[in-house]
Amino acid sequence: MPGIGETLREARIRQQIDIGEVEQATKIRAKYLRALENEEFDLLPGPTFVRSFLKTYADHLGLDSRVLVEEFRASSEDLPDEDPLPSFRPPSQREPTRYERRPPATGLLVAGGITAVLVLFLVLGLTGGDGGPEQGGEGGQQAAERKADERRERRERRRRRERRARPKTVTMKVSPAGPTYVCVDRGEGKPPIYEGTLTSARSFRGRKLRLNLGRPSARVRVNGDKVDLGTETMSVGFTFSPGKDPRPIPSAQRPCADDAGAG
Image (cartoon, rainbow, N blue to C red; front, side, top):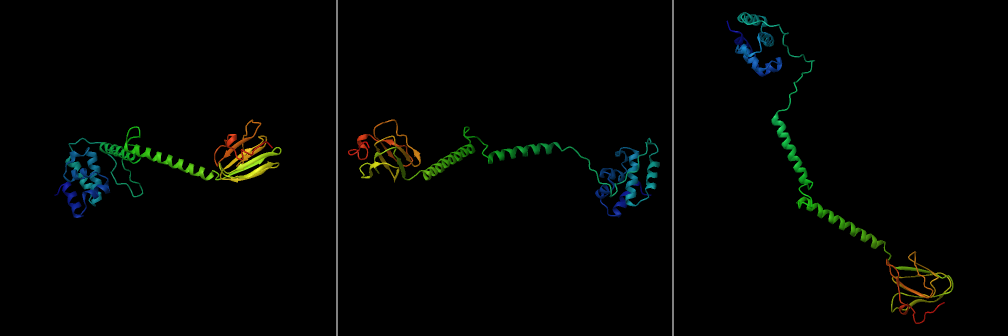
């Protein structure tokens, strides 16, 4: 008559069932299933576990588990009996399978740490973290050059805006407080565009204007800005250019200097 292990093994082989399939179905570790088939019962935790696993394994193969358990009991009468454990059974389909959470292996932790360090170095390399401009790193030097280019470009844009906003001509308005001698030309050596005595406000326009004013009590505005004529009581003279401050003219060099006089 075949023994317990041979009965189990022949039934499993006859049904063409792999030991791994039995392990998944019964939740009994494969090494214990092999121990049952080899009748190496001392590899199991104790007689109670042997009987419980034997019953579960036999029931799964469709064998009469009572006969096999009783045969094991009879052959191990000299073994100390233990408190019976409930029959080991696989969880029902309605019960979710619970997996034991084990801490990650040390090798995985080390590999994860190395990977994190490599990723950090990669990020630093891509973002120019291999040395700032003060450290002479290539990434830092490139970043400094980019910033310098951006500053130059901003300055150039600002200068272009200023040039566009800068007036191309001079518009001068003279408002006399009383009859005042005025001579205006568009540059040294050029003929006057006006010479006479003003009694009311008058405007002049040109790329450049020179003014010889008989009385500084008059009000002068250039491109909307009031011109400070100073505290002189005699005649004054100025040159006006677009975007530049008024420049005083010596009396001998003013427009119509030979003919100027107080009005």
